Every structure is written in structure tokens, then in C-alpha cells.
Length: 197
Image (cartoon, rainbow, N blue to C red; front, side):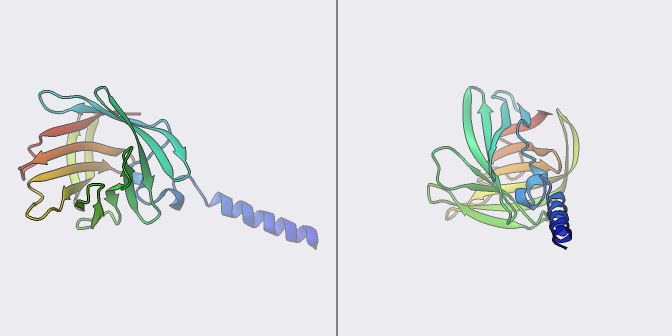
């Protein structure tokens, strides 16, 4: 009887472990839109006349935190990226206390959120499109999720400064555009995915 009970317990444990995969709830629901497997790398080409290329590389994982090395030209910065179980993708830069929320679930038009930066400025994030498409140096992408982030100072609108981030499910961040004083995505800064590894 005792042996049978031990077999039942062992079977229950194995079934429980089999149901836990690396991309499940532990990683958070935004993981599908920025899969930070250690060693993954995204290389972006500067999309305007003069500027530096950008790369992101997931170099390490400690529990729920990933170290992502961001390189722009000669500038290298190790950031902390987190997929929360509550459905947020958070980025914290070195020397900063507050994180940025760059994606939030549910992945649907109108999902919005706020976060406070280290300078005490409130930011607004919003999913504004889930069907965007682009031909990029790395290939053609459809069903892109477009996130717009802008500061919420008194008297400011999202047309005065806006960061636009496009995510492809299963691929990650594929396009970054920063617009100043412009409402038609005519960017001052633009990076487009050139390769993903």
C-alpha cells in the first residue's frame, strides 16, 4: 500500500513538472512578443541618413530578470528586462530606480497604462494597432503590435514626443521610431530589424 501511495505521488509530481514549460506563466504573457532566451540577439539598422545601428542581446537570466545588453554605436548598456506574471514587459536602465513599461497585456487596441520615471514624469503607454505591417531589412512582418509611449506633462500631447515600438509575436521588437513634433511617424530616430539570432 505504501509503495502504491509513493508511486501515485511520484506520478503526480511528474505530471505537474511536465505541465511547466519554459514559456509558460513563469515568464509572463508578454514573453511571446519579446522572447528573451539567453543568447538571443536583435540587430537593427539605422533607418535615416546618419546615425548608429542598435543591437539588443539577452546575455543572462537570474530568476525573472534578464540582462539585456543594448549597444548603440560605441555605447554599451546592460539593462534589466522583466516579463511580469501580471502581463507587463518592464525595462530598467542602469542607475535608475523606476522601470519603463514597454508592453502590457491584453494585446488589443486600446490597452493602456502609465508609469513614473526617475525624473517624476508620468508616461502613458497604449497599444494603438495590432495589424501593422512593414517590409524591413530582416524581412516582411505582419500583425505587428504597435505601442506608443509619451510623457504626460501638463500641456503636452503625444504629438510633441512619442516613442513607437512595433513587436512581432515570436520574434520580438522589430522597429523603433522616435518622433518629435510630428503626428505622422516621420521619425527623428528610426531603427529597423536587420537580423535576429
